[in-house]
Image (cartoon, rainbow, N blue to C red; front, side):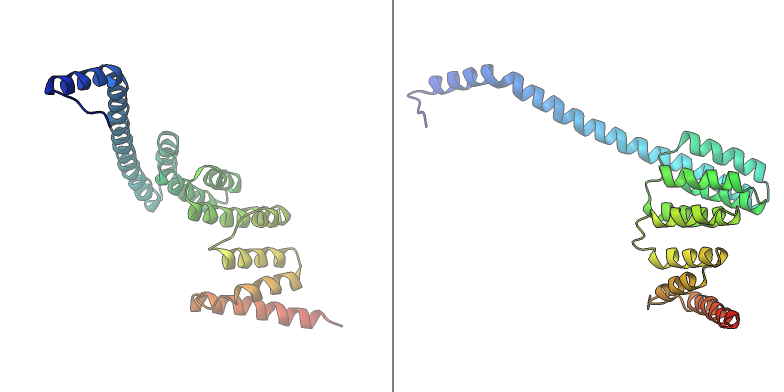
Length: 216
């Protein structure tokens, strides 16, 4: 460590050090302050976007509740276009898909559900959309596509729901054994809602009885 004989030498050394390093220090401060300001701007922007989207989503829900589907679609599409980065865009798309299904408009419902799958940042909402889309495809007499859609997903956290929907579609395909197997696997979930458990048991038992009757 360097020592100085006088105070003047120490002051001069500080001046020399500052002359050599001041630009780097100032640049670092500017970058640091800029990063903080940029982060604050971004978080404020995100908050504002989310708040505005939530207000529009509330309007979508009100229009849907009032059976004004055309207005709900107008509001929902605007929200999806202008606030696609918010969770409310995916929620609106799910709402619009339900309105389309109420009118048996399967292509529109499928398009809204695919938007959620492709664009939502929420895995839970993507699972909901994928499960609903599988049922829409089945309703369009495309059960093979529905099974493929279900099989391509990581089902973690939603496994029993995938098994149930897959079982329902196997029923449509006339694959009784495969359907029973899916229902049986789903019933292994010990934390399943009692009402849903009874429904699954009824589905499985009905298939078992039907299979027995078909045997020669």
